[in-house]
Length: 133
Length: 367
Image: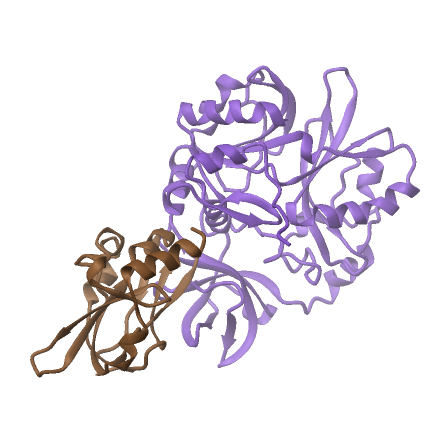
């Protein structure tokens, strides 16, 4: 996927929303290339269990590099329906393909209202520039 | 108001070669250039190159210099011979650690002698303040802070000496561990010491600030890998070397830190001497241990160490070890929990993970 198709949270997670088989919406979630570039030397990712209910802004996992640990925050309200377990053993895929094979979880949306507060790629890029990197 | 960070003589090299610069003790220093793991591994398998110019370098001259230093540090240094380097602690009156330092006694080209104390960047001003009144009362010794005039570079790893020798006039291999000498480095006056903070063989160089970039570039061209503070930390932690502000602080004494080898109590005096004599007999203080955790989440600085669900101590340093490919930590626990293989738990961000005490160091270089 291209970042231009995605929505972004302030905390650097990206979101791709699409309809699911039951008429609801499912959000695929990952971390931006910008955030991953700052996180070299990944050693571990802690993923949630399927079924976990999340509110937008709630931490759902952790990404750990040699130097530090960062929380992963859900950009949406919903329940975890799929988890990219293979990532744990293939962490190098994350920075190599952050918007494709680097997806982390899929969340079935319980509420779409929160999507409005996410940024598009242009706004997200601007935020990153302002963060002084 | 933004206060500008201090810059070492190698700063512009770091900034223009991919160095990710951060504030370390008010100096702008590179955390990494590429990857911490790559820089760490290069040091363990070939040669890593470290800019350590931010460290404080204090020079002591005069016939009273040795006695003066002997009255300040925990280690006997008055009998140190020219060319020897000793690790010591500077302690306060309670025996708490103000800094860990290296003390050098050196012969200069003119047949004279002087001493150097190399101190942590974060403690330089504190140590200068500590020394000032004591210097004022001492006779036959003067001190000069030469930090800004010199650069300091560490070359560490199995190939370090091989890569360094072409630049250094004195044969390096005969220089024994914890020994140093004045020599010429790429034609400039400087000091080479067989010391380091990585657990590998290698040297630390002191040389004039203006000569630094040329020497650094020559070492890079010869195959040494620039390595930043990130790798410096993972390397020293694998070698179980303490870091001030983590394993060492003003509320920790050298004995509980496992540094009794750097404390000489007999027949001498220094600030905190009596407190340390007491420690040797009534020793209830928590002691430094190595810790291994199950799983991949590292037990990091500040995390609580638990026994039967209760906090008994704290982690002081922790990371993922690139060489061992598992998390490693050091921390302090009461003596009763300090035996190797003692089962404990560590609260890693809300989850108690199984852990056990392990012997230090985590890594020893192959003979």
